[in-house]
Amino acid sequence: MTSSPRHILITGGCGFIGSNFVRYWLDRHPESRVVVLDKLTYAGRRENLQERWGQPNLTLVVGDIGDQDLVRRICVEHGTDLIVNFAAETHVDQSILGPLVFTDTNVRGTHVLLEVARELGIRLHHISTDEVYGHIRDGHQSVESDDLSPRSPYAASKAAADQLVQAYAITYGLPVTITRGANNVGPYQYPEKAVPLFSTNAILGEPIPVYGDGLQMRDYAHVHDHCTGIEAVLLHGKTGEVYNVGTGREMTNLEMVDIVLDTLGADHALVRHVTDRPGHDRRYSMNVDKLRALGWAPTYDPRQAVAEAARWYADNRWWWEPIRSGEFRAYYDRQYAERLAGHTS
Ligand code: NAD
Ligand code: TYD
Image 1 (cartoon, rainbow, N blue to C red):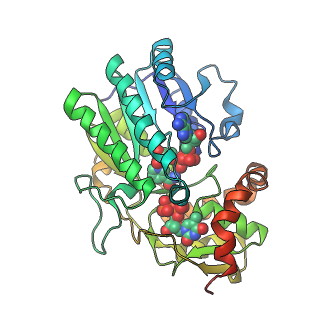
Image 2 (image 1 turned 135 degrees about the vertical axis):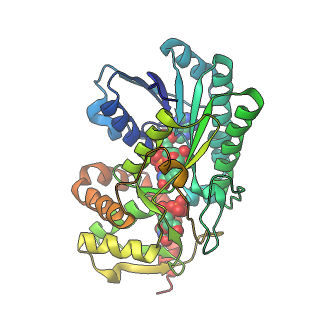
Image 3 (image 1 turned 180 degrees about the vertical axis):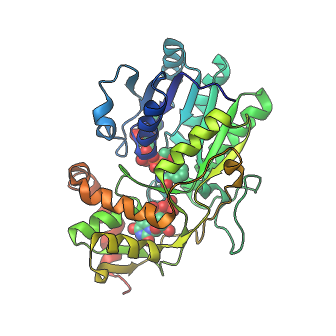
């Protein structure tokens, strides 16, 4: 695939990775026309693209990817030739507290997009995650042909979507591609996720709740490198194929916390080891050679990625202060009040 898609429907474009991708794509492909379809859940925010909304080649439709008539109408009206599906419920801890909406959006919503794509003959690119592989034993790095073994409601719903997308390629010959991203960090990530939560807590002088021993391992990749990876697959990827996107290098959560606190000049005494997440995956690790073979390479190492993300939260209080003082507070108390009251260190 080498021709650049022109009429793109980007679902979840008001979320963290989606908004970074919309900005990146429009800068690199100004001839494209982009429609963002977003339900504007708590994680979806117009202000993530606030300086872009006047742009003539960018349109926002507020709605649900599970609304088949709406998705069909958008695709017909805008002559969509590519759907890129970022829309999802995305937080593991939220999926433990309230899992059903994860099935509604991540499984059924993706299925609706596939049905419309099949009906109208549209290419679909799906954003999946390394969490579909489950936790990875020491010494192994997940490759795209590995079996999926998800362990949280979030990961299970993403694995179901991933497999539905592959089933549509096999059964109907639908032109699809999939990327499986590592833990992303960077601007506009909702502060329920670890790096923005720890960064904003450190700035506010609040405790840093580390689950369990903090020795779980993640590949913290900068969202910019995820965007370039998706672009590489959209332009040069092979139909029906899956590509891992990450740095290929992991660190422990305690190492990540050290980088955040050092970058922000915050006190390491803020760290609290609290009750672990149920079913917490110990390690994610991916081999990214297949994507590298398309000419892509990450530009950030994980340490730089985490440090740069932490700095963004220090420089952009305008973005997260209203979030943290609003509905987020109720979630925070539900998730952390008891844990912090009974913390283990
Ligand atoms: P996010 O939670 O920041 O944003 C999700 C967006 O989807 C929001 O704008 C939300 O309003 C929208 N949305 C939710 N339900 C919807 C629905 N039913 N219809 C339309 N829009 C809806 O998520 P993110 O971190 O940007 O993740 C984007 C995608 O990347 C997801 O598919 C996620 O599974 C995947 N992913 C994320 C990471 C990560 O580290 N954040 C890593 C790998 C893959
Ligand atoms: P998170 O950003 O939620 O991503 P994921 O669970 O999808 O990997 O969490 C990253 C890591 O940080 C993960 O191992 C869980 C851990 N974590 C904490 O220790 N404390 C927290 O408060 C949060 C949100 C996460």
